[in-house]
Structures are given as structure tokens and as C-alpha cells.
Length: 177
Length: 142
Image (cartoon, rainbow over all chains, first blue to last red):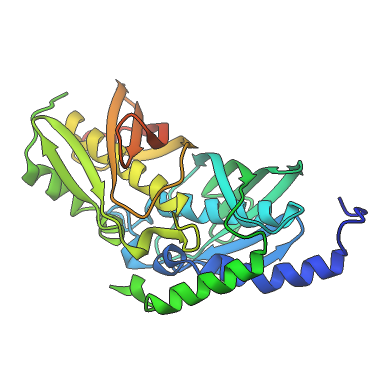
């Protein structure tokens, strides 16, 4: 992929760093969860999810809800897939497998690191881990498959701009209620 | 202990122990002994505002919640079960409308339980997503 004549690698990196923060933090659900963009490279993505009382899955233990970790892993895998595919178009998750290795430590930020280890023309195969500081002691791991879908437009950036306008029009902080 | 006889008050009491449920606005719908959960449409669960489509993570979390709720009520757990591993298939785009989920306990073991969950919108026969997975049964008190 690196010597594909279809795109300039530095140009692609620059473009990824431009769109990735909005891809991660700019969707209404991303805002509601509090997802934070950390880093992106071709085939790789890192996203974090700071601990928040509204993400708790068990009031007794105050451990973050497994489903919140799932959403974080889904988002990180999606960004890694997007970065590995030729076109920066909309993506659909086909399937996702999550292993929960241990409870996340209450109060700690969860970090998801995803790697797209194979991408065909429109399918991306991704693995990811979620940890709270030590990647050797993960909280969860994921395996996902994504497929590129045709959105209304093929111009991803135009889509993202439109998306951010829609978010702004809807009040931006709609998730805070 | 397996029972299909639980009240709306019991369902709400378990839901109140899961703060995350409030974030996605989950509400119970009890028809006879069958529990259906509703995730009402709101901007909060949108993942792609352009299409528009629900966030896959919100749908997954919703189904996980349905599994935990069904297990806790049906098996009479005093603590909430923890997920060990889940598989999720995304069959259709989640449209900007209410989503429903119903969980089925496929096997209730002493240590683990296997659960299947279906999420749908317009028609039960056209699920938008399916989940199956294992959950650890909480240790008995005492």
C-alpha cells in the first residue's frame, strides 16, 4: 500500500490528521461519551475515553460500562480502517468481537489502540486493545471488519464539513443533558 | 433461580443501578412476561449525522444492557453480571428512530451464562443488529 501510486503518503497523513479529530469528537455520540482523538497514521489509530460518572455500568463498583468500552473500540477500529482504505468515504461496521479481560479501574482514562492489519479494496480487517495506562495489561481487546459504503457524496471532506454544520445547528452540546 | 415473572418496578430498580442507561435514555417496555427495551431516538446516539445513522457503539451498548438486565431479572442475581466476550453483527444501518431490543438467555450456567440479543426498529423480522456472548454469573452473597 505504501508504494501505491494512487496517493502521496505525506499528503494522506496530513489529510488524516485534519479529518480524524472531527471523525472522533465531532459526532453527537462521540460528544456524549467524551471521546478524545489521540493519534492517527496509515492503518493505525489511537482514541481515548476519559472516566466520567455518566459512563458507569455498575453504581456499586463504579466501573465503566462494558458497552462504553465497546463504543470506544468501535470508533478506534473505524478510524484505523478509514486510514487504511483508499478512499476516505463513509464506513459501515460489519461485525465486532470484544473480549473483556478485566474490569477497567474506576477513575482511569481508557485508551484504545487499533491496527488495520489488512485492507482490500473496500474491506478492512482491524484488531484493537483497550487499556488504562499499561498496554501489557489490557482491559479489553477487539476484532472488527469494516466495509466502505457509498454515502450521498464521494467527497469525504465535504461530508465532514456538512456533518459539523449539522452538529452546530443541532446545538453542539446536545449530549450534556 | 429462573423466573419470567418480574414487575416493571423491578426492571426500573435494576436500570437505576446502571448510570450508563440514562446516557442513552433506555426505557423498559413490559408486555406480559416479555421484556423489551427501548432506546428512544435522540441526537445523543447518532454516529453519522450525514447519512444519518445511529452510532454502532450506542447500539452495541444498548444490546449489552438488554443482556445484563434480562440475566439479572431472570436469574435473580443480586449483583450485575459482567460481560466476558460478545460478538456483534451489524445487519442494517440504524435509522434516526426508536430502537428496540430483546434478550434471550440461551443457557444459564452456574458460572457463566450465554445470551442472545436482537435489536430492531421498524420490524422485529428485520433486525438492525444481533449480539451473542457470555457473561459471568455474579458470586452468590455470603
